[in-house]
Image (cartoon, rainbow, N blue to C red; front, side, top):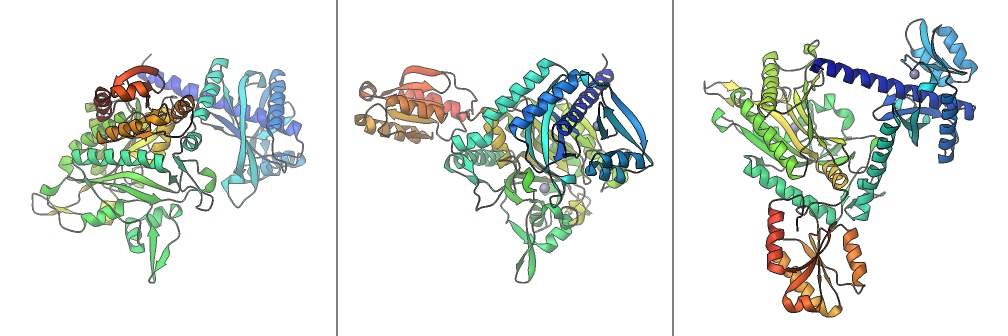
Length: 594
Ligand SMILES: [Zn+2]
Ligand SMILES: [Zn+2]
């Protein structure tokens, strides 16, 4: 198969899957209207991994209801009713849905342009829809309803509240089974659940939604990540900055955020009669530092990084654990350089990103290159030649490293092309983390310049870059990827020391001191509990290494070692053990071979 044919059949398969899922959504609406007369159907599209359908009904759907609906869906599918498309004059379609009390559908038909609309029928069920659909309900075989949640008619939070039933469908039984298994695994690894079990982070009703509290153990991990991040940046030729959380209105007017980003910003606060805004992005602050003096081409490139906390408005319905929040800390950086330097800089930032992701265990990544829509180049800001050069430098970096990537035409933001890197987790799910993004807008708006070799002022190239994305989100991804079993270098407690009896407490304390003196993290469990219980607790807390000490060990200056997930490893000499652990920690080893 040629590359092009492969691409084509991939697209065809995607369309087929979407048609199957959307047809299953119709089947769902059909069953719901059969079983619950008086219910109104909203919209029911195919989505990533499945489909949903929205319903207007006073009573909430229970899990028993879902089972009954699924059973009814199977009956309708088994009857193999043909799915037929009909073109109806608009007035007739309106009469059809009115006669059935489907006023939401009537509203949708009314809003549709043209005189004729398409209606899909199967058995007694009719839906206003553009299609396409499968030929008959019998072709829908492997499906499952998954959950119910709240939704709003047309996404309007002040509008009518609906119930959204989610489900999924696949072409084969095996595909469905695999997906359901993945969902089970994902549920077990849910970072909100593990975050509570391992005492890592939380939220509080009185604090407000989407705002994260880092508990001591989570904060310990974050501090380790931050320290690592800073050291890597200094080693990598970056400088680290700190900037405030609020800035004057004029700053956000100049940056353009009050024009194109206002919906994501919080209301201003009045300080001495002036409006200040919480920052949704760090860039304008870094630009203020850039503009604090004049730069020569000899000073460039500048690479400035900040763990910058930003606040963005997200609707309460979309907030989700650590993954979607209202306040978060970006591992942000901006690179300012000359056009001559851009190729080297892009290659350098790409290598840097991949090397940092690899230290966290993410080596299987998906890379997307987002470029302009070639048919619509005037909706982007910045000179054409800059776009061409920027895109060429991104492509060149990817090709120099032989990295496969997907070219996404029309996916660039209006101010520049970009590379996005999605990491693949242990369950095979992709998470968007890294973004490397040109910006031809800000440098213009803030009138940034440097003095070139010719003694004249020139506009620097500006690149935004975040590697982990946000610390909150990245932490959520790490928790799920590792199922809470953090690698040694990230574990909040690396070694748990357990004395067998009270008389071994002093020895346990001395072990902890020795471990700490080597720059490793340890604690002793001195509670008056049974040994077995304390070991189980340490295992539950997923501490990578456990040292047990009794009379024999105290006398010999040794300990008995257990490795999490591997079990008993026998007696170890303490110095030898610590040298080995220290080396694993220094190398940021993702596994412990003992
Ligand atoms: Zn449809
Ligand atoms: Zn930026």
